Amino acid sequence: MTATGAREAAEDRVFAALANGTRREVLRLLRDGGPQSVQALADHFDMRRPSLSEHLKVLRDAGLVSEQRSGRQRIYRLEAAPLAEVQDWLHPYERFWRDRMKGLGELLDRMPDDGPA
Image (cartoon, rainbow, N blue to C red; front, side):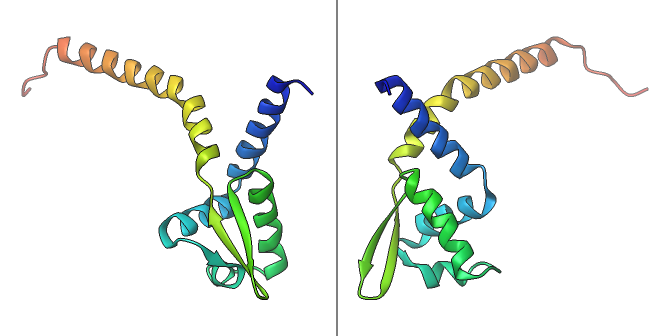
């Protein structure tokens, strides 16, 4: 696989991981609460631990979380670096919409105000 192909595959894994609401919530929990055990994370969801473990595996494979074993516990930590790539990808779209909204604002400013009838 070429370097470009490997980068695109990694980006695809990140976007696929972010496509699921449960996984986005796990990332939010880790962002807001710092490293947490599987059980601490599972307490926030109405699902069995094996189901949550599958979501954590997807996040780990995408590089969005890391896992550290502490005795019998697995502690998960947010790895935000892949999110910078998502932000880089989204930046041109943000600029596009910002320009569109600016144009709309300018158009509205040029329109006459409707007075009372």
